Image (cartoon, rainbow, N blue to C red; front, side, top):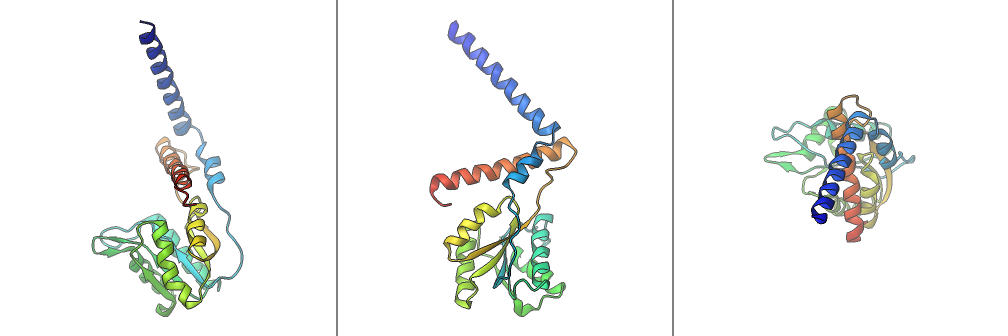
Length: 208
């Protein structure tokens, strides 16, 4: 009987804690400070290449918002003269290639085709770092501007440094941490917690 009462109290406490966490995530701006804590600031300086990490692509080749932001940031960096070469990463979704869609966008925005490389075979950040090294290091492109989501830079930087690169961060804001609706706040918190979990997992594996 005592065990049953203790279990009931524990279950009730867990339920209350879960409801409290839901309320905080959905109805307060707690995602904003967490986003700032996880985010990386941009680095100044010139590089040998801009490297754009993959995000997503629709089956018809259209780029979702986060992927589009990364691609246009790479174009902006190229046009500012920060690097003479752009490597667009991004895997396939059926017949569509995110890397190829990004390359077409860059060329449409005035980047010469000769300045754009593509690599569609990277399914993880670790593989993208390896593929980037295979393409860029033989060209003497060791110092890179790494374009990815602002809260993903910390983890990505370590994979690319292990692959032999000197990394300058070029973070892009993603998600909606300052949004005003419960649904958007929950979505933002979910993405940030996913990044925290990924960092913890890679640390346990000794990969970062």
